[in-house]
Amino acid sequence: MVEILFAKSALPKDGVLVLPLAEDAPLREDAAALNERHDGALAKAIEAASFKGKAGQSLNLYHIGGYKRVLLLGTGKADAPRRAELLGAALATSLSQESEASLVTTGFSADEAAQIALGASLRAYRFDKYRTTEKEEAKPKLKKLKLLCAAPKEAEAAWSSAKALANGVDFARDLVSEPANILYPAEFAERLEGLKKLGLKIEVYGQKELEKLGFGTMLAVSQGSVREPRMVVMQWLGASGGDEKKAKKPKEPLVFVGKGVTFDTGGISLKPAAGMEDMKWDMAGAGAVSGLMAALAGRKAKVDAIGLVGLVENMPSGSATRPGDVVKSYAGKTVEILNTDAEGRLVLADVLYYAQERFAPKFMVNLATLTGAIIVGLGHEYAGLFSNSDELVEKLVASGEIVGEKLWRMPLAKEGEAYDKELDSAIADVKNIGGGRAGGSITAAQFLQRFVNNTPWAHLDIAGMAWATKDAGVNPKGATAFGVRLLDHFARGFEA
Ligand code: BES
Ligand code: MN
Ligand code: ZN
Image (cartoon, rainbow, N blue to C red; front, side, top):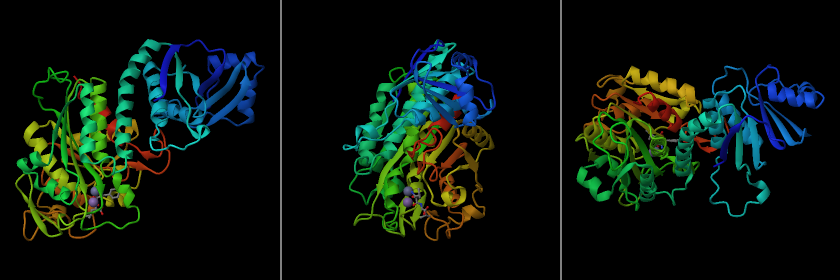
């Protein structure tokens, strides 16, 4: 990660200097002084290049006033949402070939200075562990970023919590980016054990334990694979306990559940070959829950939060589940599996029910790359949000707007109503797909709801958001870790 330093506002004498400029605003003090010392060079360049300070707009001046490079970055309107973190992101992109730079943060608060740092480090992420032949000049170089602030101590304190969040996001991105030959359930679980060092309590359940518990629907997904399944329970008791040693039993914790299908071939209901490689990121829900727990622990959040992930590989083989098979879920309900590619809901059914039974959550949020249909409906702008609680919806949507991970509420019917009735099976308590393709994301959510008691619950279908094919905002293309920043912000609303 880019090293971030905070220092008193005095301008450096040389190097690379970044000056943020709001839309149609006059040059700020530092920039104005520099401009005057150099015969109005800045103002002339701004004029000549029609630089308006629009968000994302940039203007470079080389070898001026002792600086190797002065970069003017537009920050848009003074009240533009997320302008600080987006400035950081723009800076990281523009300066990827510089090794060090200083940024003047006049006009930004200490918190915003930390947000600039957050945006810069998030955007500078790169998953390059498997590149062994890349040329030096092609690699990004930004190592050190100095933020010049009026109150550097305050900014640094804000950054220490934002940095924990950035670490959580990057942890999730690493998990999501890994190919499925490297990251299978046991390996995923092992990486989560590494989070113990942050004070998280980690429990891992293997094949035997899951059999004993009676996780029939989750095991039905896993049984075609030579990779053993895992369920991992991560506990952060920041309100009632502190760290692992002091941890008591959580009281009304916030519970987060993630779908962790480390590869989804579809099973016997095999997916078509084209694009199947994308299914390595069918564990992005579990990745986000893991990154969130790392962030909460890393910044010592004053909440009790539990993360649970169901980790399986969905493969076709002689031992795989067949369409038509009937299995018994942990909840006791029998499920007729008509399509083995509708596997995420089978994993979640058991983990959701277990989470409710064991932890009596204040509420429960699950994240899953659950349906292709949500991409048809919402594209790559919004994740689908399904919930039985208006209050939860309101809070989640608001957090999403603030961090730029947007949610759109979708319909969810009560049990026995039309959407739900589609799941009635001729031979078991419920079947795992609806009648046809219509409303596929909704029937998937209805299936999950059949395993939710009276707990306030929200399901985020993140299939369209987990992976980006273009750079955008604070995310370079690839794994976005969608949900980590959203739920970290959301959890802040419950901190003591
Ligand atoms: N993992 C997929 C959903 C998915 C599709 C995620 C594309 C990301 C990108 C899920 O397990 C799945 O296969 N869903 C099926 C459900 C269907 C069989 C009812 C789908 O969406 O086609
Ligand atoms: Mn599937
Ligand atoms: Zn899947």
